[in-house]
Image 1 (tube, helix red, strand yellow):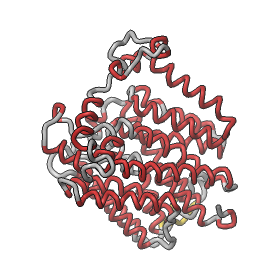
Image 2 (cartoon, helix red, strand yellow):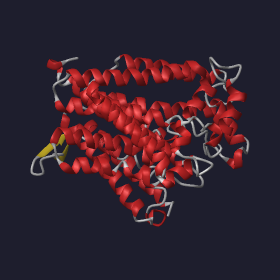
Image 3 (cartoon, one colour):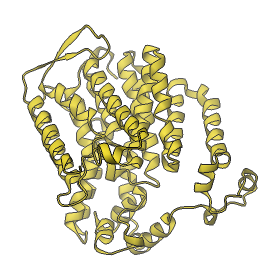
Length: 430
């Protein structure tokens, strides 16, 4: 069945190429069923590209199909940037991200493996190219809505198939892994919540809640944390200082769920008898946390690749090369922390540049949300700002960059669409 993913890859790739070079395509309006629209080539290309990021199309043996797909999509984004009539936006956060990318390239010069360094760079490059493509192509809210709603439909299909418990038989390897999917759902949930406040349709509120459920059902601690953080930032965007009670309530719910949801408590602690009273009394420490060997992995790599190289790290791809060439921790090949991997590979400089650019994107989104009057610009701003923080938080203990096609690319994409829509609303320029 996995062999079919090669066919899906060819079909999807050809469709993207054809759409990109088409003169125009007739599509349904994203909100008005009886209305039709004409999207130009780059616009319909963007809709299909953004809608299908949750498709992994993996093949367990032979060609690394996901890596090939990632590289091909990056080439397509560059082609779309060349073909688009608009120019990509380059505000300060994007420029800082470009400096981060330059630092990764410099890191290849002292890396033990330029090949693995190149692979790492591609994963960080994709969200940037998505951002730039969106900022150059998206000038109308219909294009933004069509692509965002398309991504929600694909996310819903993936969720339904998972609930059927027959995904491994029906569509093996078509969608990303459960952990990646749960992180993707953070952005889809924030978009649905933002759309609810725009259109007041109860179904959007339902979808927002629905896409927060998987991380609870699957007991993914990292995604639960990311979802709560995203909701806190969403509330801060919408209500500003008045959001403080909501933020406190969400924090209490988060802490309470750790101790009063048995499945989460059992996964969180080595001793299932640990209580909230123990936590409040300061009796819970790192040794009591069930990390699934994460702490041991982080300590191992920090000692070998970070200590004495705190500023620059040991080179882009150094940790990945170490994973792939040595059988460590039972054959594990991932760090389970992008933060640790980043500082081991490229040092404190990389951490500062990367999270500095994320922070600037969030602040820029907040500024746009509070000062711009167009509801669709505001929708992109609050979705981008809240999901950027939520997804970035999951990088503490998950491999978010490895899944950048379906995780980081979505908040970056909404930020890029916000920039693109700003260009078409110059009268309200910020």
